Image (cartoon, rainbow, N blue to C red; front, top):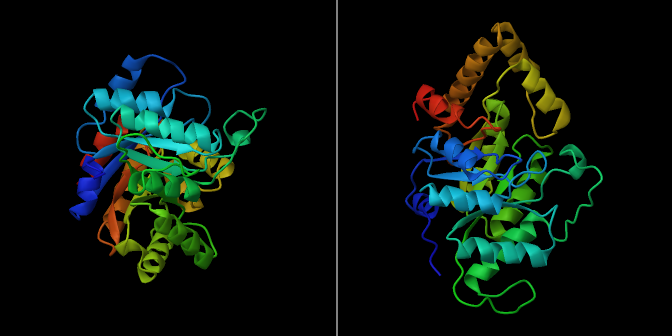
Length: 301
């Protein structure tokens, strides 16, 4: 079936794409979700809904349905850490039934990093296999075990990439596998080094990857130097240079540091937005959804 999401249309139309991120709360109040996502404004084409990103939270499926009800196109997130293939494919059917048309396929942070060290991880399949499963449900109308999907199913699959990981050759090899599996869009981890990101994007371009998928660069507004150090020390994908932490610290108090974080992001966007092969920007709100319109305005997007 034809995937008729707005995000799919933007990718096909070769437009410059803006997406954003929403981290659901650890609660069941849908009005909280509605207020947060409405505060993002209408500029993002679609909004990713995190799947227990930093610990137990409202399910991505339920929060995505709430976004759709608000007229905001969601990107469902599914991490393979917490579910086996039966549950994952069931959730995909449920999402399609609710009118959700995009899915980001992730492995997820290890449970020890999200405050649930006592829980068992699953990892029955990895993110590449999940992308392939979505494509197979789309193109062949069958599940991973070969049985038929009843009725129509159409969902746009995407994946993530970390442009900071080296060696570059292995990084690009894994990225190519995700695209070969069927990832129609790639959202990167947060970019803090323009030079490192440019090197990665050039390698992806040389490998022909940027001709086959839409690459969106992740941009994370940092609130202050303390947050920057905590993220860098806890999560290996946050490669935040010391020079940026010093710059935040030197800005002054908390509000001054928050504003400096937005200035840093707008500078990064300005330097990368015209790079050949880049199709858009993905704003990683980190739970600070209200900052999205402010950043878009400051960066001219």
